[in-house]
Amino acid sequence: MTAQYKSKPDGARTHRGRTSYHAGVSAEIRVAEDYKRRGYRLVAERWRGTAGELDLVFSAPDGVVIVEVKQAKSLETAATRISPRQVERIFSAAMEYVSTLPKGLLTDMRFDAALVDQQGVVRIIENAMSES
Image (cartoon, rainbow, N blue to C red; front, top):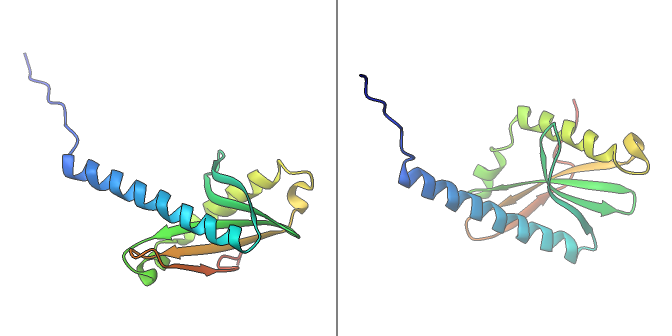
């Protein structure tokens, strides 16, 4: 008879994961409030489609603004956390999202990055992602 070993989740890793999750949610709330103060209307949070997830989606007078939120110790570190592969997934998810809107794929879209540091400072970079 052979012994079966079940791996137990690393408690420290589980705690870090929970901490990161809550920091991300807090960052998204801060960013959403910033956009709302500037007159945007939040229409979707953590929208999930088959292609991926969109952190925040706002309605704008000329279409929608899709925001990828990145939180890290510094704004510079947060900026490095948006990979080209992730940008592709965001674009695919955005196409899926706008296909549900009345204008469909004719909907104007802007892709912003919102960076948040550990002190809660928010930096919005409009048109941060574009198809090349």
